[in-house]
Picture 1 (cartoon, rainbow, N blue to C red):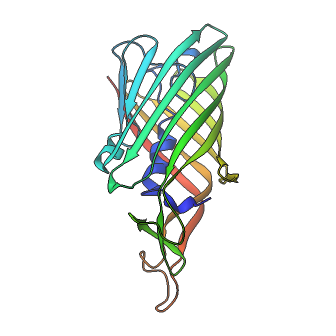
Picture 2: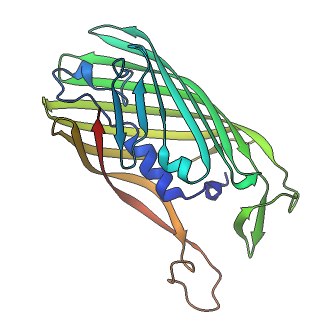
Picture 3: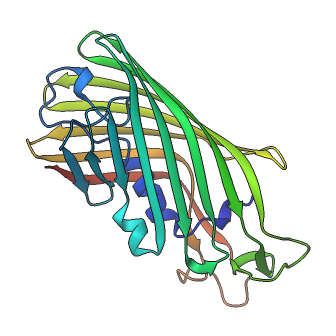
Length: 261
């Protein structure tokens, strides 16, 4: 798998981590925690964060959202979640996600994903959630210099041509509502390309604590996996005359704040 194709991976990482941790103001029970579970926002309610997306409840069953950070990076994006089943014991929603970058013209990467997310409630304080998505991924041609990927190319290079890959992503999440204002969340994510070749990304595990101050939520935690931050030569860490290589870290901090309106 060409893991280095993604644009601005650090920002994308922070966005994807914070997108699953928003919740209602002052949780009474675990059934009120939204996104990261199969729950949706109430009609007319919304969230907006530093890295978290702008989310809005169109109806009591449908929530839509977009990442302003991506939009500023010339990446059109939108997602929707429709709640199919909602009870005191479990919830089920269908999901749709779209993203297309124009950062490097029409040959930039994009993806479309459809899936489902289900949550089982274990009393008023615990919840277990599983999500599965199937994705169509635009995999543009890539230029190489000294063996390292460069910005995407218009013309095929080294026998590569733009293509559509098929992938899947699975997520498992556990929530513990310690108090009506304190939430712990543990999430594990695995992404794979299944066609044209089978390729698996390094799984990620994220643990975060969220405190509810009312309309303001603060989150802190860490995620473990394999994260490409940037090239060592671009950061000034490589020796003169050496081939550039990428800086990889196994752990990243997760910090964010978001607001309910």
